[in-house]
Length: 242
Image 1 (cartoon, one colour):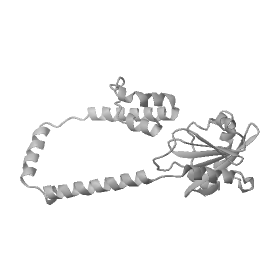
Image 2 (cartoon, helix red, strand yellow):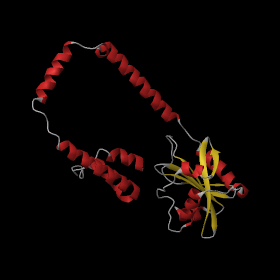
Image 3 (cartoon, helix red, strand yellow):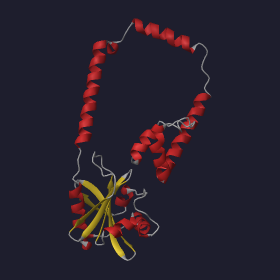
Image 4 (cartoon, one colour):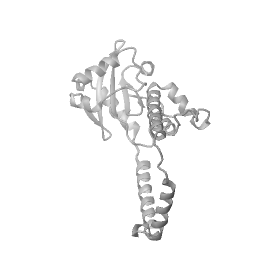
């Protein structure tokens, strides 16, 4: 289960804690305990839901509201608007189904050749003369990546828009805009390529390692971005940074 699936499930979790023993929420709750970013999001959602619940409880129901609603329903049933007629309702339902099918097909048909992505990035990483990032945002990112305390598989706070504005190196990979920064860890040079997480049905759920010529790489994703890290160092060196 990834964070997106966990968020979808946890949005239905009641702030009262009444669902704590519900097995349907077990895996998502465990994911939130393991992932600090997801846990923070979940606590924020619960606090907001609880505040809304308190506000709703404070609202007084007007006397005679039920009778007014029933009376209004009887009056409206006597005369239907044109858009409430069965034929128009059936047509609207058909259009909604067709739109849903079209969007579903479009989503399912989106595929990305990950081998092509990795091969293009590996080829780029092999040409050191092309590299070089500029701007405060890129410098801050490089400093974070260079720290031995940083684990790249953890969610990273990366603003692609700011990186681009500051002049970070940008390239196109398989039709996607990608930012690239170089950093050094333990005397070895690594290249990190970052793109906005694409809408695709075949996103890898675990880090994918590959080797092209003398370049070793690993591809992974989080809730917001897709990453590829490349280096002449072997797979064990890449794993040590994740």
